[in-house]
Length: 149
Image 1: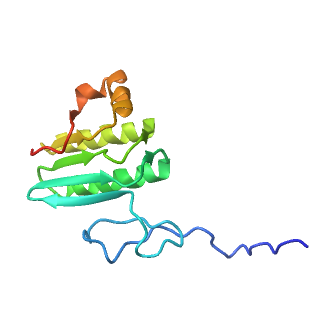
Image 2: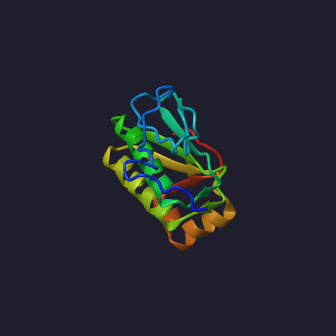
Image 3: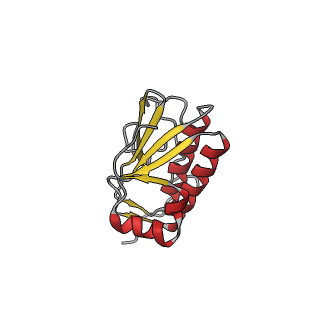
């Protein structure tokens, strides 16, 4: 027996939707298809005084679609402040793609263009080695633990 074929009018992929339960209503949030309003986000954001702390949820930052979403969310955070102060924690991250490194460079340029500050922290030694080989450890300020800006 042959399974029925989907009709051309059926849309198997849903577009990103805004999360009504977000702590940051001005930020667009992506939910995977059929994820519902409480699906996991690729990052967790905390605001402490004038410093925004970003933490990656996933252990592997490899998927280009997720990297684009992460970049868009962090860009919105940067754009929401006249002089952004941002700390990005890699505490949960075990693998990072070159596309993710490119997104970090773009974020760094965006922060600097607004006279802001960006710090990276809690980077796994194997990931730090990639930063060192690519000389990105000279571009970014990297700390062991989150720091006060």
